Image 1 (tube, each protein chain N blue to C red):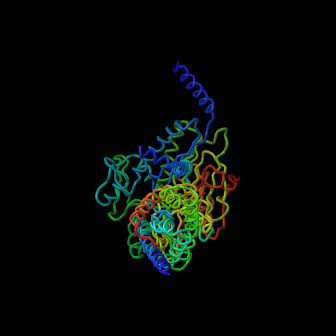
Image 2 (tube, each protein chain N blue to C red; image 1 turned 90 degrees about the vertical axis):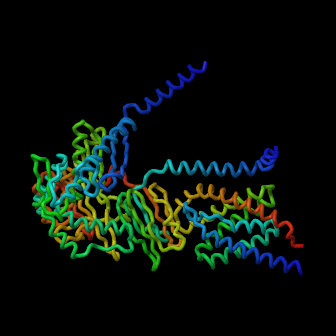
Image 3 (cartoon, helix red, strand yellow; image 1 turned 90 degrees about the horizontal axis):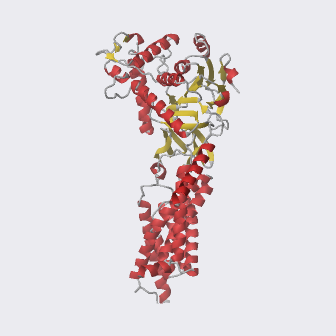
Length: 127
Length: 345
Length: 167
């Protein structure tokens, strides 16, 4: 009985928070399902694209655009991730490998974004 | 009351489904990351996803077979593969599958045709580079290239004449205990070709196999349309994804690029194609693309051509009919062999 | 006079506590690292101030905490980043507290979601990468979870400090 009264009293807020959660969950599901696998790993430093690698490559690359700042990018098995980094929070290192169009790894301290993009050309296959 | 309604809905939905998928061929794509240490992409035109999935499973299984046979790093249960041969170098001859004999024979043939610029017996040297690259991937800040002394020592153990094939007994023996086979420059293309031939035997049409840049076209697209194949631009930040677009059918095209697999030491790139003479990666080219009828030939040539200049390369490809090459030098200058441009659109 | 001194000391204590909370927050690393995911336990202090002292005081505590924690444990970048989150979150919480009859837990949850939203917004502008918005759904979910915890803790804190009145 008491529970019912409590729910009734807070009905509006429960509805609002509930719908935010629902929308978020649906959006999450859609992002995960709808995003196609990407073709390129794009490195953006300070808002400018500086590097671009095929997602099919096997590459280890030290991305260093300022003294004493670095992020070590690894591309392997169709996925990209940061292996080591100089930033204090190491958030970029802890992020899961990315492979789908639109996925990003951000390193705010080093002003770096690693982004997955699709191909723009219309060929059937690239060699 | 209820069941006729359900039946009606099922019939309607079923009719709709069949109508919408009525005999039109659509393009399907699938990828796998399990074979030859690279990405495999299969594109095929089929009536529906199910038909494509069945083909893909078949192709995947075939690739798996070749991957296991040609694996130089791991052995598998109840299977003698290249790794087994390497392990028994200087010890004993190993009985192997005919597919392995065929590959090794083809490797020796390509060694002769390329004057040793593609050598499947240089495993000793390639292993040093492979280990250095693996270490660089795991610990990039302490990346190192192999020591010169080690390379020179390894160089003494790459004599292809010490690969002894006994066709009657189906055995291979490496006479030098310190030598080993590394078919990285050949196996992907060769296996791609074998799988393609198997598909052609089943009169399959409209498929593309792409095993890590080793592309083999089976037939053409529906309505005899040619496949459009892009040659990746080495300058990946450029607005043009492709240096050239080719319109082809039934052929193989393989690109070897210095930008595909490499590691860095002190800002200097070391790619994966090692010159058998200098024992180092050569930096004359960023990529070489070879069109041929056979994906194995195209693969072997694209590696061999990386280690010699363009004039020498042209004399080598003269031995073969229907081989067309595009060289992209480190400065970005592009050279075509005769008729390569005919395929360009 | 005595009341003013008491209030000033209380504010100082609150800021100090919120700084400790911010520090603890920066130490706790959640396994699913996404830029911006934090427990946000310092929000307990902000909610407490808002309920106990009022709008003006909550703004003071929030801003000073932000400036001091950025100097002590962060950088100029993290300051701008958290500022947007803090402003948006506090504004919403003030509006909700005075204009609706929402519970403290609900206000805490919505405040946490708003905080994440503000950070994402700044990240999009700073990095010029609109794809960062794809983090938003996940941040809304984690914000709800941490918001529930923070909200419940705030309820408890207010309950057990009932005796401590200013006048």
